[in-house]
Image 1 (tube, helix red, strand yellow):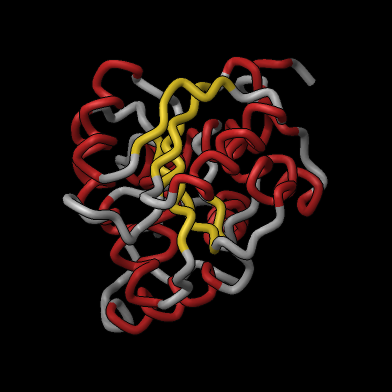
Image 2: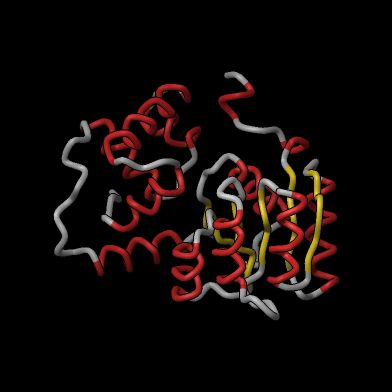
Length: 222
């Protein structure tokens, strides 16, 4: 499997850490730096985060929701609007459904609660940089339930998908990585990538984040 298949290595990934608590912010930045990420900036509020992201252009912004000035949700929306290449990973003390939904709707790629381990955070940042949505265990289920509730009466727009593509879409909805999907379906990593590209084309979507939102909104789970 090539490096290109796996996405950028940790030392090629630039990260900004945003939190209004200096000790927590510094600890997260230190852990990510020790793991090999290039921490290019930190910020203590939403406005500062947007300003610094404009000059440093981080691949991933690790961001708290409870921020002074622009809220975490508002900052997320501003960051992804300012640079569509920026991926936001929310790291919050809250696991409330409304907060998770608001963050995802604003453009966040992933959502972790602060009780996550250092290893979970490092893995989440790496996956976020590869445009793979990642959520603390249980939060993906909350999203699935809510989006299914509001779209129960809508017909599925994915009737053009093959049976295998539908299987892949269901696993995307569960937040699984390409590697996990490949192992589950006994396929190569490249074949899974090809299926995802075909699905994106058929659904007129542009990237993995949009595909995950589509899957969640239309209840594609097992």
